[in-house]
Image 1 (cartoon, rainbow, N blue to C red):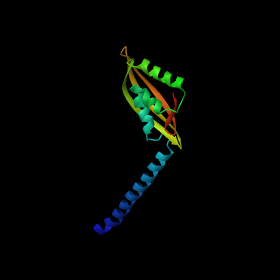
Image 2 (tube, helix red, strand yellow):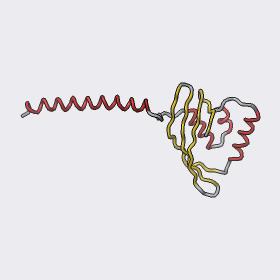
Image 3 (cartoon, helix red, strand yellow):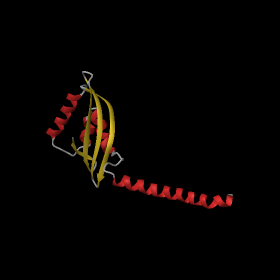
Image 4 (cartoon, helix red, strand yellow):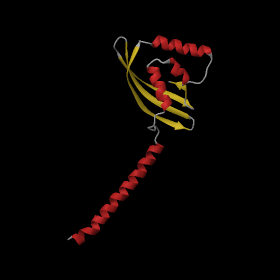
Length: 135
């Protein structure tokens, strides 16, 4: 009886190994060709945390150099937003890198002063680690 089962056990074991290899290669290709990758850019994450915690110095450090007037406007906007909203959650939805250019999308849930919760997406466009666009 063992002699009769041995060839089928060998075929079953080879089929399992082949399925494992094909699955491993397939998953790698799917991740590589995906529209949104799963790797979050460290500069984008620091920017988002600084944005939610109203840290204008970090925000300015993570944006390209601009003139004094634009920097003063960034400081003023940060001071106006202080205390008006409370961030509840920050979720990284995905992103894509192509050389020096990358786009990362986040979902933010916030509570306004009146207690109302708001949920909105935010996309960051980075070039060489600097945020050039936020929408």
